[in-house]
Length: 312
Image 1: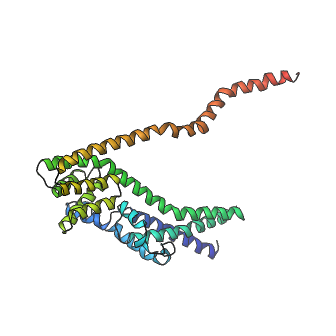
Image 2: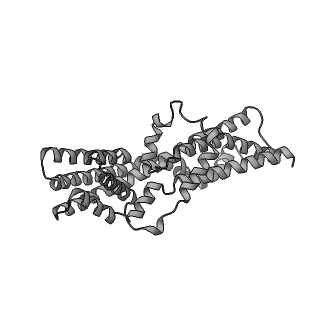
Image 3: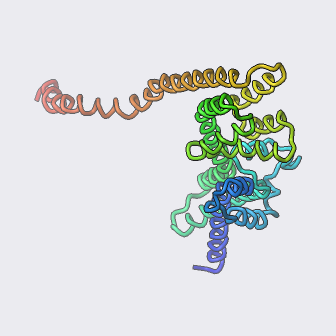
């Protein structure tokens, strides 16, 4: 192995290690969540490993991360809101994200070219260019796919747990607790079922303790989650306080509406199963079934009927 191949392999190794550290740091707890756990007494789950790893990745990839960062800057990009929806609040996450995107875009084609060159049967010409283009596309759009998956998973978790949270909040408020105390009690009860929703409710309480207006704190909750049902809840609370109606009664009606919507989504997903099974049946199961059923008959036709028709 030549010195050039050794250098390329070392570069590929550095790219792979940086990618693994960055992806691990993106999904680890952020400082806001660690602070919430510290305030609730869950000291065993605290730790700064994710923050340190993300800071290291951000510093290492800062020079090349600007290649994929939006021209107007990350503060004006829609990805900032996507990070909030995914529950990633670390200030180093944007730099790590764009740095990883650039590393994967450049590193995957390089790694693929090195591996194909070492195998001795590397494609040439247009085939090589197409393969490298596919690897670069995977490296560029892969982080976006991972981020979208994190966002959808977290929003689905919040949506499914939100009707139960409203029921618990209704019971707490009817028992005499205020809105802030009811949110904190619901967050404690939902810690095991939906940690994402529990953290968001605790963040609302932290903002209220810091002196923020209730409507503004609830509006920030809707912005951070990006869930339509949470936005409707915030609007309902604001209107109930503005017009002097009972918040507990409004919560009960809203929770019933959310349960109906959740059931409708489940029915919609169930009705799509027949259409989703159509293509596997046509392209996978039916051909095998036809071979099993028609195979013996075709063999008999080939052995008996064709020689008879040929005069033998």
